[in-house]
Amino acid sequence: MGLRNVYGIDLGTSSVKIYSLHKNEITTEKNMIAIRNKEQLLAVGNEAFEMFEKAPDNVEVSQPVSFGRIANNNHVEIVLHTLLRQVDRYIGYGPVIYFSVPTNMSEIERRAYFAIAQQGELKNPKVFLVERAIADAIALGIPLNKTKGSMIVNLGAQSSEVSVIANEQVIISTSIPIGGKQLNEAICDTVRRHNNLLIGKRTARRLKVVLASMNGDVREARKIVGMNTLSGLPREGIVSSALIHNAIRGPLDEIATEIRTFIERTPPQIAKSVASEGIYLTGGTTRIPELDKYLEGKIGYPVKLSSYYDLCTIKGLEELINHKPLHKWAHSIKEKR
Image (cartoon, rainbow, N blue to C red; front, side):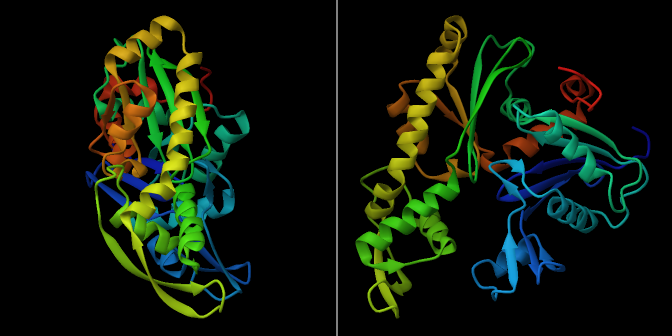
């Protein structure tokens, strides 16, 4: 690849992960942008996240990626190019960029990745797309050219992608519209009903991080401050781990049901291989303790948890970039699958 700068980019709903080859490091920033009066850029990444649920009415703080897909091309372009400049002051001419992407994309969605890479300071970039499930499989050590049926479930920030790999490709894939965001919303609703307190999604996320566990024996509690639903005044309350467990169990049961349905749609011989090999579980939501054991009990298949969590996809891109034999799983827009 000569002197070209090479990057692997995972545009997730919650965060952007960028791997720089010449630095050999991964940078992670929140996938957020703050705009004042619909036109003035205030902040991107972690700086924008600090404004989330705190900004005045004339400042919009949003995520330009929704359900794992580009929702606002212009905002994604701003976030990407700003973060690339933070990673490397000199991006150089004709950089090579590998994007991780959802499996079931339209041609318009495919072209969006090429369009956002052509703007700003990037001059004549070479752009390749790698299916997210393929990148996950590489990071998980799944032999793509040998597996007869491997299932990967990526529990993301706003949706979960379930894919089966066989014959060196993703043969079937689906997206479940449930992820970490929906768990946060379930916590907000449960706290409102149980404690008569209105809390923000950031508070719900913190409660999920410190209290969520699918082991019903865990007994912890945290003090929180929210808005009293009756008086409208700030008030303290106590939230237990049992309450958080009950709040998130519903959405997780829905995910388990969708996975079981997906397995039923899988060809028998491949489903047999999945049953023998187990289901690989990755994504940021999998940090919830005992989640793998919980889903294993609900689905009835062995579940293997990735130690990379939300970094699994970008780790797969890192491996692909550094090993030439894996490059055949990266495709340009001119290539047809």
